[in-house]
Length: 397
Image (cartoon, rainbow, N blue to C red; front, side, top):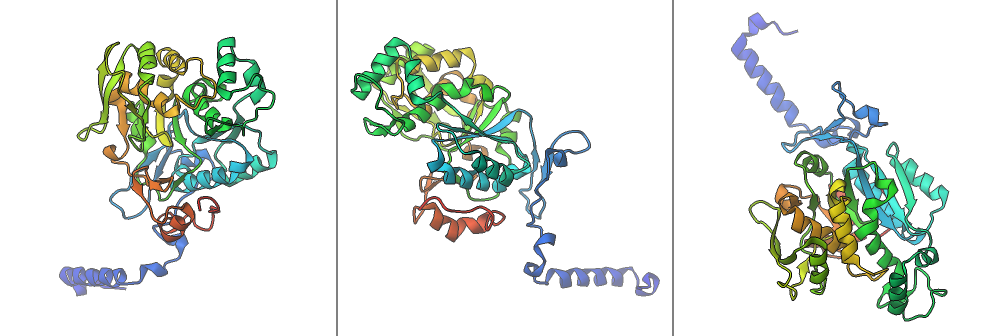
């Protein structure tokens, strides 16, 4: 035991400095993972996230100056979509990576819409992997032929003409019409107009959409959903623009929202959409740049409001499984016309989340080699180490 009176305050101070220097010189990498700052707390239930005020929080431990508090908000859901079992591997990989990058901190519900039913044992297996998250598969249609039979006559006739058939008997979801499978066209239409009004979405006010071929590659240090809700956003998107809608859509845009879109860009200063609107006779030769639809956070009450609901139906017109207009223009137009100041690019608001999709990070930075499996091996397993050895990386050659 040290005798403070004999050592003296100055000598004791020097002794403490020496002890600190000694311990900081140790090889920290030899510390067991269970004691390391890099360890990630994964709660066993939503109640594990409650603090003594009744809120749900997760504090990122560690010595990073970027540490933030993650708050679990009510009525938030993570949503994606598949066609069926041939895309099951994508879904498992995407949701596993997102869990370890973000959702283990907040435990938001997950809904995966599917065109075809999925075997119950597969659903239970994924539920177990994501537990205690509430995960559901929701079949999003009545069956192709049932959907066709329920069409109003004008839509029915337009659909058969598009398919160049007199009857729909031999059509399947895998039928290739004008270069696209009907199943692919269905996902575009579902996300354009049906998603917002779907009964399974009724309890939610905020949606984080992630395509099933979108893969998280690092631990998220800041919470985009918390920022979005606290600042009353309409949409926050990872990438803009991703292509553009054909100019013929301008006539329908005017019919839907009483304006055309002559110019659309993201402000370099504020990060929100900036829109130059036109009147009935203006800008009909202008294409409309699209919000990239693979990853975004959206205000459900806005997109299912009567003005947006009716406007999107007007833009769709008599189309059924036409591919255009698609989900990206349907995301873009209402936000650009009605709420551009509340429509934000993620990076401009300080959120660089590094989501891999189609050989690009956040839809912006191209990666080489282009496949996700080599990108995971070379980079992402090191930037998201808690998922390494847990998430099976089988998709994305």
